[in-house]
Length: 367
Ligand SMILES: *[C@@H]1O[C@H](CO)[C@@H](O)[C@H](O)[C@H]1NC(C)=O
Ligand SMILES: *[C@@H]1O[C@H](CO)[C@@H](O)[C@H](O)[C@H]1NC(C)=O
Ligand SMILES: *[C@@H]1O[C@H](CO)[C@@H](O)[C@H](O)[C@H]1NC(C)=O
Ligand SMILES: *[C@@H]1O[C@H](CO)[C@@H](O)[C@H](O)[C@H]1NC(C)=O
Ligand SMILES: *[C@@H]1O[C@H](CO)[C@@H](O)[C@H](O)[C@H]1NC(C)=O
Ligand SMILES: *[C@@H]1O[C@H](CO)[C@@H](O)[C@H](O)[C@H]1NC(C)=O
Ligand SMILES: *[C@@H]1O[C@H](CO)[C@@H](O)[C@H](O)[C@H]1NC(C)=O
Ligand SMILES: *[C@@H]1O[C@H](CO)[C@@H](O)[C@H](O)[C@H]1NC(C)=O
Ligand SMILES: *[C@@H]1O[C@H](CO)[C@@H](O)[C@H](O)[C@H]1NC(C)=O
Ligand SMILES: *[C@@H]1O[C@H](CO)[C@@H](O)[C@H](O)[C@H]1NC(C)=O
Ligand SMILES: *[C@@H]1O[C@H](CO)[C@@H](O)[C@H](O)[C@H]1NC(C)=O
Ligand SMILES: *[C@@H]1O[C@H](CO)[C@@H](O)[C@H](O)[C@H]1NC(C)=O
Image 1 (tube, rainbow, N blue to C red):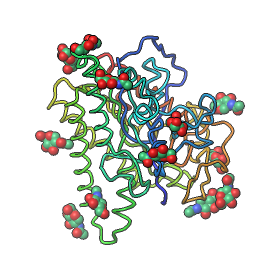
Image 2 (image 1 turned 45 degrees about the horizontal axis):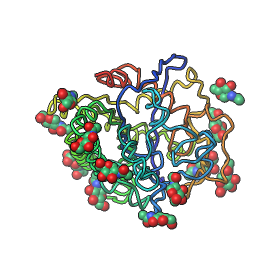
Image 3 (image 1 turned 180 degrees about the vertical axis):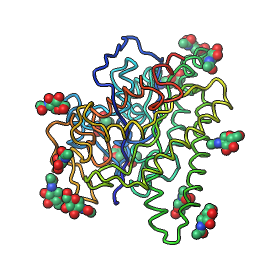
């Protein structure tokens, strides 16, 4: 494998269900953290970052065919989730508000902010070797601390009740797995894989626990968390053959269990905390194994990209793009299409316990 960018994501079903999207939003605000599944332009402000999606044909199906930095042909999973909550799209990127929209900063942050950065992970170093610059999860939370301070000043005594009703969305872990495979496993011939995997997950658990605790200290109470999709099935790994690499998928499946433990522990530590854990693994696997009901006809190849290119930027201005994007699971070598993201969001929002537990997002926001 070479260029591991971000990863993939999520999705699945419920085609044909009719959703009642209220004109009122279901929560006062949405604060979004994590990786390229959720990034809506953070990395556009990282001049040296190699994890960028602000070039065509990214965004080809976005309003005005605009490449916004989303790793998608259109709306990404963050957008699709918040659309089900009554918003039009994800709140803006923090770095956009800070750099390009300072006059609206104070009013914008009351409705939400997106801190997610493509290539980042749970661990501080994740993504930095390969993509040079990403905003780590710890730094994203630090940025939220700044936002939190502004909200407190702005709303005074109503701030706490606003933040504790708001939704905190996080997608992370895929890039930690990629980095572990790239920089730990593959570079070390004398590796004891059993022991190293244990250590890897111990580190991930304690680090994720710390991140969530820090958000809790800043008033967060409602968490919508996504685990890792079957990253052994993404086109960059399978070269478009559809033959998934089981060892990689095993790490992704284990990740889901580990994060479930972290969340269970945290919620007993902090009784006011509520969460939904989205099983990105199950959601995506369903799309791969049973694509027909979802009207997906290609779940192996990237719509934009070239399976033969292992290094460099596989999806770019001189790459072919498939005609009917909604038939593809994968937009590029790592990421879902807008259509697949929408399917995933519906599963997260109203799906059963096999996809999201202990409650789905629609119940979480009512809590
Ligand atoms: C990124 O590049 C722009 C345009 O060249 C420049 O204005 C900005 O200061 C740079 N940002 C950083 C963080 O270096
Ligand atoms: C932010 O502002 C800079 C300078 O005005 C501009 O070049 C850049 O395109 C803007 N970025 C976004 C995402 O709007
Ligand atoms: C935002 O609010 C803070 C705190 O009330 C204030 O200090 C700052 O000047 C405001 N910024 C803008 C751009 O209005
Ligand atoms: C918050 O307190 C400041 C200073 O006491 C006051 O100017 C402002 O109007 C208050 N804001 C709200 C939303 O109550
Ligand atoms: C949210 O904050 C309000 C005001 O401080 C408080 O009454 C309420 O119990 C809090 N809810 C949770 C879930 O922490
Ligand atoms: C690898 O590590 C595991 C767990 O620490 C240990 O039980 C096993 O004996 C080790 N294997 C080898 C070949 O050293
Ligand atoms: C991977 O290797 C780096 C050093 O190259 C080390 O700092 C890090 O802790 C290792 N990660 C895991 C999960 O073992
Ligand atoms: C959760 O709590 C149990 C019991 O206190 C502990 O054994 C376990 O290591 C904790 N797990 C995590 C992920 O913190
Ligand atoms: C694209 O694919 C979808 C789903 O299979 C199908 O409903 C639609 O008719 C197709 N559109 C075109 C223009 O082929
Ligand atoms: C998926 O799309 C790729 C690229 O367009 C194509 O080579 C492949 O044959 C398609 N697979 C299926 C099952 O249609
Ligand atoms: C894929 O890349 C190879 C090598 O750069 C090139 O020859 C080929 O035309 C490309 N195929 C597509 C479909 O872009
Ligand atoms: C990837 O698949 C293409 C055909 O689609 C083939 O030409 C190429 O050799 C394969 N690359 C690897 C590394 O297997």
